[in-house]
Amino acid sequence: MNTYTLNLKPLANLITVDHFEQLCQLNPDLKLETNDRGELIVMSPTGYETGKNNAELLIQFGIWNRKYKLGVVCDSSTGFVLANGAIRSPDVSWIAKERVNRLTREEKTKFLSLAPDFVLELMSPSDRLETIQAKMKEYQDNGVKLGWLINSQQQQVEIYRLGQSTEILNKPLTMPGESVLVELVIELDFIWE
Image (cartoon, rainbow, N blue to C red; front, side, top):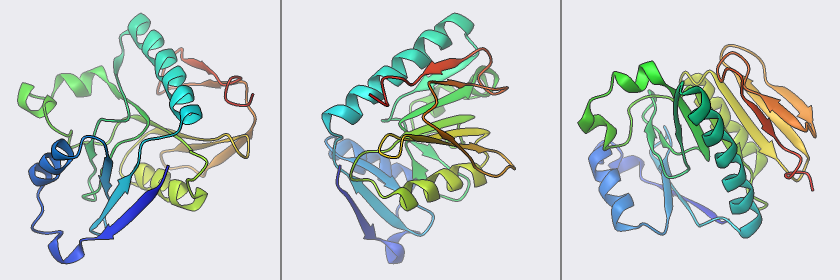
């Protein structure tokens, strides 16, 4: 996946969330995000392996969520407006039911102005580790309670917990959802094959 960053800082204050949503709708083949520095990040679609692995992860989250009904699972097309002004779309995200229930019908049709409770980023072979780590830190700084950065090349998972240091696991076969995703255990053996 190729990523390009465009500096829109002189226009950043003029481009609203509604403008950005329109830009995304007009360019459905691109995955777009913004960061807190007024930059537009343009990402191409993922390759086969990353797409397959992301789908498998999403299925596991979906099955768990259907069973326990504790919240809502979102895919990589869901945009979140973070407190710092960045608009991000993690590969997998989850929001607790009580937070979703507070949203109006209209709010649910747009990018959500909140940080998910959980985010997962699955690195593509062309991603730069430092860039994705900075994105994970941004999630953490904006209130995400739990985040996983899955790096198949280094066969590691970095765990980001709100208010804590990053923990790195080497080639874990499963990942527990801890207190954020109660009773969740995600299998990762297919990632390391």
